[in-house]
Picture 1 (cartoon, helix red, strand yellow):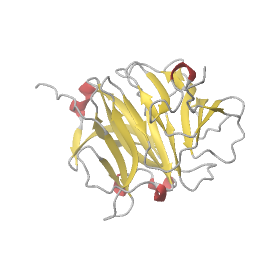
Picture 2 (picture 1 turned 120 degrees about the vertical axis):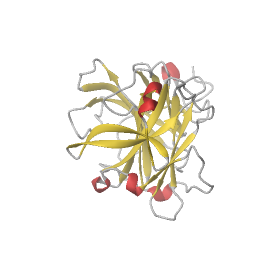
Picture 3 (picture 1 turned 90 degrees about the vertical axis):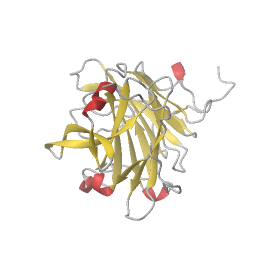
Picture 4 (picture 1 turned 180 degrees about the vertical axis):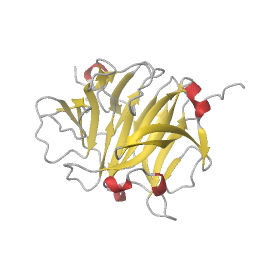
Length: 275
């Protein structure tokens, strides 16, 4: 059988319905690049002032603290996106071109090419809380919309923050997808609540002929966050070796800027006269 061709139009909106018969909340947008790879952004929340940083992560610990003086810290007053390129270059940039510094002067990491995806966890995720400040879906759902119902959410008793994990799969793996409730899902073994279980990741196809995405939603506690509503975009880290428990320079962005932040930051807002 000839393999399915990737779709030409690959923008997708990820949504969460909190109440039956009410419009779902728009959480994030995933844009598939015509040159391969994808971007994740959150244009559905009012907050624009945020804290962007890189830090080392010890995967042996369940909770991580931002190490003052030992992380690269930045600020911005513009909306951002996380871009993930086929080469394995992953970086933050402005949702609108020429609004946030990127490239060599920006914030990014190098991982393996996307056709050798991360297998130990998601390549990126979005964390959101206080969903009353996220936009409602005010149009009819479209075929590429990914709508999660509360029954789709894992670990609902774990906290008030919703996490949308974005996994990368190679295109041949799409043949392993199952169909549940009219949509394609990947069945991914993982440990939740100390137990191994098979979780459903909703498939989002891209224009990239080599990869596609699988997305799941779960809950987590919200630690040391004062804002009643906000979001995070988290990316991968550099790893010295597949078995190294320390991930270097992992990518994080928190909106709004934490009021208790005392870490000096450098603005990433783009200025045409900057050298």
